[in-house]
Amino acid sequence: MAKINKCILPLVLLSLSLLISCTKACSGREDMTPEQVVEAYLNLSLNMNSADQRAQLEDYTTGALKAALQSASDDTITRSFINKNYELQRYSIIERLDRTPREVEVTFMIAFRDLGEDRKVKPELAALTTTENTISVIKEKGTWRMQDVLGKKTTIDFAVGETILPSE
Image (cartoon, rainbow, N blue to C red; front, side):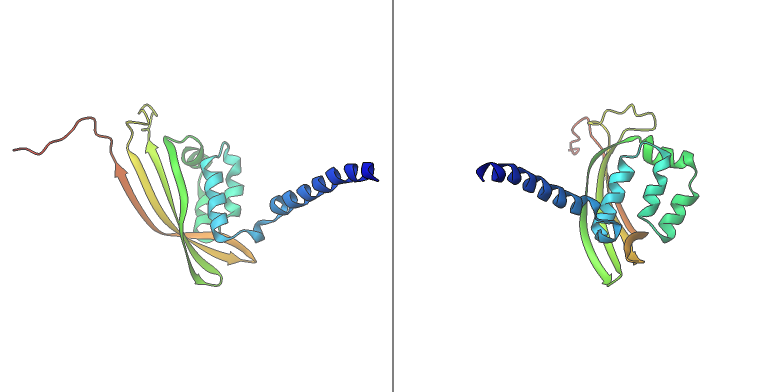
C-alpha cells in the first residue's frame, strides 16, 4: 500500500499543478480586468518584432484606437513598435477610475530614454521622457477593450554634463 501511495502522490501533485496552470493560462480575454488588458497591450506593443503582430494589438482595442491601428501603414507600425529609437526604463499602471459598470479609465506611466533618430546617443546621456496616459477601457460583448486616449502628460529630463551656477 505504501508503494501505491508513493506513486500516486507525484501524479496527484502533477495533476493539481497542471490544473492550476491551465486555469491561469487557459482563461480567455473575457476574464481579463481593464488593467490586465492595458498591461497586455503594453507588453505586446513594447516587445513587438513583426508588423504581423498588429492583429494582436487590435484584439485589445476598439473605436478610435482600433481604427488608428487598422489605418496605419506597415511602415508606420514598424517605425512605431519595432524599430524603436528609445530604451524603455519602466512602465506601470498608476490608477483605475470606474466611470460606469462598463467603462473604466486606466492611467499608466511609461519612462524611456530617447536615443535619437540614429540611436547613437548613449542611454546614460539621453533625455529621460516620462509620459502618463489615461485610456478609456470599455466592456464590449463581455470583453474589456481600450477605446480612446483621454489624457496625456509628458515630462522630459535632460542630462546635464556640467554644473550650472547662478551668476553673482
